[in-house]
Image (cartoon, rainbow, N blue to C red; front, side, top):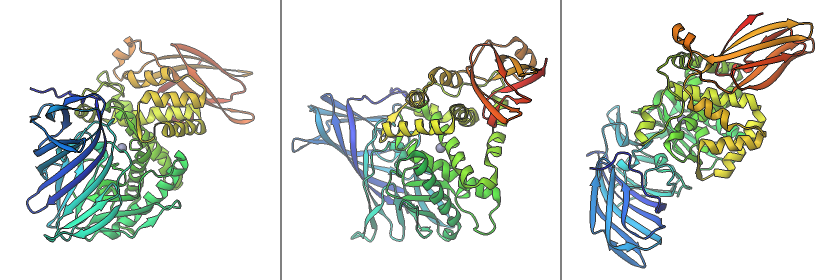
Length: 540
Ligand SMILES: [Zn+2]
């Protein structure tokens, strides 16, 4: 029996996959080959790869000019691996692993899966978190980033879209069509994607920096992709400016897939969407529909830098991947569409996490994750929205410019590589000159949130505030008892003086604090409505 928490050894590292997939949409079957250039760091007879629901027809290793067939292949359905055993140990250095395999195009919305609309057949992939292994044998953990050179063979009359740009198309002797795609920069396996079917696209539009952008929709719907295409163009330009890093991939194809489980998936260069979040009637679409499409595009495009270019080292930081994309996606959408009042929506979206987080059954934003499935299963409104709110609180506390400076430094330092949440806090610490690790860890690893009880006393010289914090529980008895949890609370005091509106930022540490706001005529203890805390104001 295998171990479902099995992690691949770090002694063999993939560099490049040459991948050929031949899809049969009549039989919902595929077969393929993977030629994986790896670096062997410690000589070994045993190679572990992830593989699930696949028949492996052949496996060999090529080095020193010779092919060495694997002596033995063991499938382990618990660990979701295939283990190759060789007679001779693989030498350290460059080795190519060659595998041939077959599988079904699945009728569930993961791996390489089928989709139908109006009697027409489509096939698409959804690999996050750990389903690339259902489509090809691979090193299916986010830290194993590699280049992908993909060739797809598809039935005549279909198009194929993938992460790379199409570089060649030809008709095969049997009448099917072969699509060849440009090699990707290093990406994680969960971000590899392809879509096949009678898709139709909008005309290409270009960002000011020259990135081609298209929307693909099922046959007959392409004119409903214009709004989404233009939302991608605008958001992409804003994100190049925000990150100070040019868009890292060849092009943007945004694809509406007839059957899709999540809202969207940030595959670099080939972002997939559920139809309702990408297709809109150009004349009659409602404002909520437009907001949804725009914000989703901005969220997914944020991932091109945050998640795709710099990738979490392991799934325990999935919360930050999503929280950051939610926050910066909202920021971009709000800036480009000031008429929509997006931050009002954002704050309104926090009602639910505030409610859930006031129950004793709530959980911390971040938790240890033994396997990829756990990360996905425990992903909920707390992780997503409270996470985004905490990121926003930190931004508001540091100031948007300093925060962006930290983001840029972090992306530069870890581009095409992996990083952890702690790496991000360190980048923010360097940018701001403030200690943040303790603050971040308290908000992320402690369940719940505080209520600040504030007693204000107005004097001839402004206001004196005496404050006490405690964890907020919805249940009054439980609230009375409390549980002793304390947070370093970044408070933005906003107040009015004779000179106008002023702000004071303090980091409230410990149970009690006192603040003097000189000249204050009134005070609001959550400037920018960006703090994930409650407060009660009592006049003394
Ligand atoms: Zn996301």
